[in-house]
Image 1 (cartoon, rainbow over the protein chains, first blue to last red):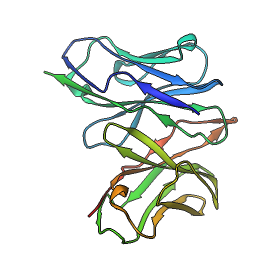
Image 2: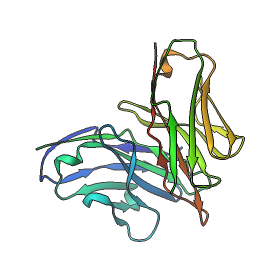
Image 3: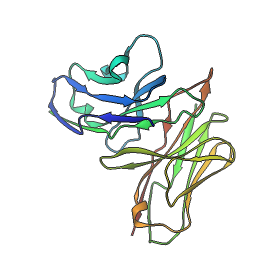
Image 4: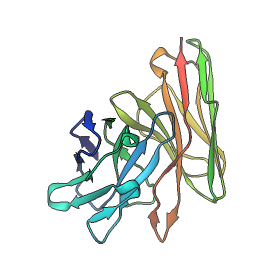
Length: 114
Length: 115
């Protein structure tokens, strides 16, 4: 069965610090990879996605993620965080199929101090 | 453009009472539909998904059921709620494009408290 593991459950950073959130998945086949973000009081929205091609993908608001197939990882990065990045971040995976079922990690709460 | 409506936003129900949460999608046809439950520190757990009218797959054994009476309508139900059913429920949709699913798009969620 597929599973997704996010290494950091709660991260506290100061503004301008660099961010890296770890994500590893367990699945033997071809997958699509996603990072979702949930800002306080808002609905879950897509930050970035990887389907194929360049393993370094860029998303909204300066975020990027790198797919390393050999490590089954899809870590999220941002060079310089802002207070407005305070949110909960979810890594998710789906196996390539017609169902599109997403399997989510436990989530990482990011708190950015001004 | 596509939108997803989920209601109610919050709900407080007594133990043993029935439940019906509704989700509708606009602006797309034949979407895949999903119900997730979000619990603090546990991420989002897939409860049900549907690839077509009347087609429901359950991912985890539980006290809940789902139905898809129309192409763009997805309903989460229970005959008798348990305290453990409390949580934040999210409806989502995706579509197949060239044999590949798009990312999922989520509704605003329903905060259910069973008392």
